[in-house]
Length: 458
Ligand SMILES: *Cc1c(COP(=O)(O)O)cnc(C)c1O
Image (cartoon, rainbow, N blue to C red; front, side, top):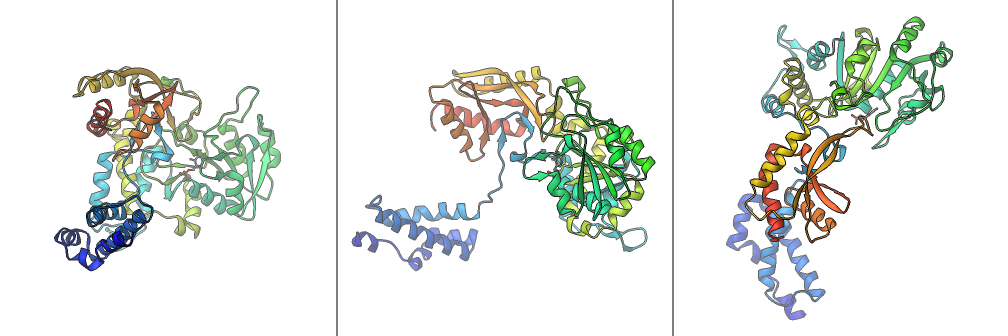
């Protein structure tokens, strides 16, 4: 073993080699030296464990670029979503429009008027940017944007109910994934939670009895990823809005997904739209920018001007503010929506794509493969919108199933470990890729991976 250790080249020796010198040109001295050291350490381990007995210098030299690649590679990378879940929080939520991102690039890679009033040549307010287009689209007086919807809810509660009470229906005291729990947010915002009604039923008089001089806010929360069914009653938003107006208490709604589309054609009747909440007379409505709206991570607050003005005066806003990337994305996205350019919005396209069209796409995919396609099958599947929308509602779709000799877990592992990982699903002991969430640019990559699997060059 001592003899083997002696064959390991020194750091200086390695650094003077031409192939390592060319790596230094590409990656810089610091990273290359670091990777040389790590490669030597790894080879020492391999010798110690008895796994390496010859060709020691070659092994070190081969390791260096591999280690280097791992060191600099970003951990956040592209994946192909074959789950059929459109707003998949684990896979980055909404896919953003190319058109929107082109605009973001043009703003973020130059100077811009983020906080500059071009008319007066003086300092301006960043918050003025998204306000105009958001207000126009949602038909409200005012709007503001923060880091995400959790921040928006916290900011609203803190602004109107710090040291005061917030009235919430027991049926809406939810926890959504990623540790967002209404009672905890309430505590952090410095407000006292007042629960009204029961888990399954809340009446208008429950709200009326709970509102007193200590009430800072009445809050309605969209139950997102769960539904209470059966013997239930919740109070229509309009009735609560009328009650709050009469009592002089602001009324806010956490809408979560921020649905802007009429989903009834898909058989989804219990997903209210933002516009419906606006029409009900709710004072402040907040929702995520990267769920059904289909844009960047953000928390959008829309509603009455006098309340938004109060939020703007809260110093907490400074800690939750967003940057030029978010503002420019939201402005361009809202412009697309106002111009009714829905076909440029990936989330819209995925939700409303007909199942038959997806089936035809898979047929085209299979006939375009340059390999023996036996073992492939087109199956009926169920896609989901996701992102806390309509948990039990599914949209009919089609998937590409793999009926191969390998067990489905192995196929799943094969796709997940590709350079561009493909995430699919296993059902009835079969691995499949739901094509509702496959993007046009995914197709060539997927074709390559599928053929490599079928011809077993795995
Ligand atoms: C998703 C969701 C949130 C959190 O929104 P983020 O943008 O992820 O912070 C809050 N409330 C409800 C009801 C939600 O569905």
